[in-house]
Length: 349
Image (spheres, rainbow, N blue to C red):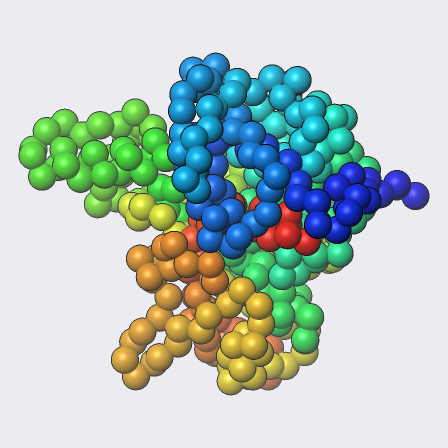
C-alpha cells in the first residue's frame, strides 16, 4: 500500500500559513495563479516566484508588495510547503522531484505526471479524496479539455452511469500559452493592415481559420496527443477503466476559453430535464440553456469565469429510451482548465 505524504504545515499549528512557490510565474497560468491567490484570499506566509534564468532578477509587484523573481533550480524549494508548477513537462520532470524531496506538495499543471500511478490526477469536483494518496509528493492537474469535460459529465456518470463519451473540442489560443494568444491578436492586426501574417507559433494562418489540434498525431491510431489525454485521463479521474471516450480536438481562433460538444450514451435512462436539473445543482457549473432566446455557452462569456457553462442540453434523438444526451460546454482554459483547478487542489490540502 502506498504511503501518504502529509503536508508538513498541517502538522503544525492550524493557523500556520504555507510557504508557496510558483514555477513558471511569468507565463499565462502563473499570472492567473497570482490573480486567483488574491481573489480567493489564499493564505501564504511567503511567496517565492520562480522562472528561467532569463527572467531571474526582475521585479514584480503583487498585493502591494515587491517581489524579485528567482531562477528556478533544484535548490529553490527549501522551506516551501506548496509548489505550483506551470512551466511545461520538461521543467516539471527536472525540478518537481527536487521540490517534493524538499518537503513541498507539488501541484503540477503539465502532462509529466498525469498517468503516473503514484501521482493522483485530480479534479476537485470529481475526486477530491485522491489528493491524500500521493507517494511521490506530486499531484497532477489534468489536461484543460479533460477538466472542462469531466466537470460536466461526472454528475451524470454518478447518477445513471455513462457508457460512452463522444467529445469534439473547440480550443482557444490560451491552450498554447501567452505567445499563441499574442500571435492571434497580431494576425488580426496583420490582416487588417494587409501585411504578411505572423506565423511563429502554429506556422499557419490562425485568424479566420481552424485546424486540427497542434499536438503530435499517432500514425498508427490517428489520434493526436490531446485526444489521447482526454481518453486516458478520464478513465483515471473517474476511477473507471471501462468508460469509453473518444475525442476530436480542434484549434479555433478564440483567445481564451475552450468549448466542447459532448454526446453521451447512458447506462440508465435520464431525460434532458432531469440532466438540466442535476447539472444546475452540481458544483462548478452554471447553466446557460435558453432555447427561446438562443442563449447558450460561448467562450467570450466564459472567459475569466470560474464555472463551466453548460447548455444545449437535449435528448440525442438517435439513441432510444432516453439513453442519449447532448450538451455544449464552455470553460476558461487558463482558469478552470489550469490555475483555478490547481488552487482548488491546494485549498483541499
